[in-house]
Amino acid sequence: MLELKQLIRDVPDFPRPGIIFKDITPLLRDPAGLALAVELLANPFRGKGIQAVVGAESRGFIFGTAVAQALSCGFVPIRKPKKLPAAKIALTYDLEYGQDTLEIHRDAVTAGQRCLLVDDLLATGGTMDACCRLVRSLGGNIVGIAVLIELGFLHGRAKLQGYALHHVITY
Image (cartoon, rainbow, N blue to C red; front, side, top):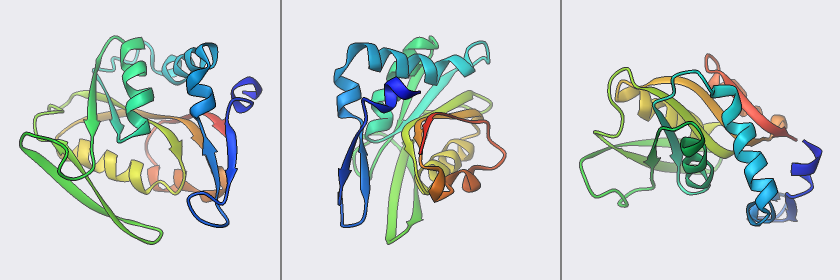
């Protein structure tokens, strides 16, 4: 999607030297680009009986809520620790350099509920894999995963085998 790629800015050496950060804020401020991105994320999952879209803090909230609206279903947030007020479960997972933790409300997903996981970016796959494990631990049925950007050279897809994975843009 050349027109969407043109709305994504490369920021060298962020958040640390050697990283080229894919900044989606120019896409977010462009009404036509944002609308197109949401439609391209949602379209492969229309008619699939999606009952909830699940997105991880924070950019997964941006696209996840819009995709949920496009699919006429609800949105479930997965958050960083100490942000959710009710009973929750947590999962600590490994990152390239260290660990991180994500939480979801215990009642956010019901057994058998058909879920679509949405995020802005798939890099190494660690965060999305953790999100999948949280949803599955609540009995959710993961119908698919949709990401705006897949950094193919980081092979995050390998951690998500067995899931229908859709990306709009790949680098």
